[in-house]
Image (cartoon, rainbow, N blue to C red; front, side):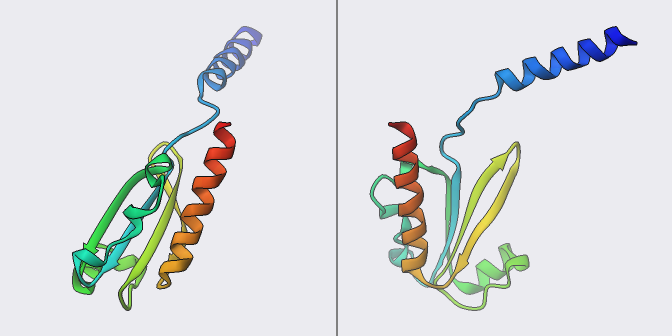
Length: 117
């Protein structure tokens, strides 16, 4: 019985040691706009440094069809997610304010740059 517990603890330790301490490219966003030309989050300087995935949706109808759980009422709208583990993303921002989304992403880029130094 002790051998099984020790083996389990050893395997758990090995698994934990093999996990990366830093998960790069961990933010994603959905940008809902009226026209494709209005999409602008991809133009943020160094966005690729933190970007895991992005999606631009043109039109409120398509956005509500693709993401009915978010109850998107108008455009432009911005939803930012953080990758928190295997197959899991947590929404950290839902806003209709472009500047708020840009500010958050720039802050995350700066945090990531400081962590990398």
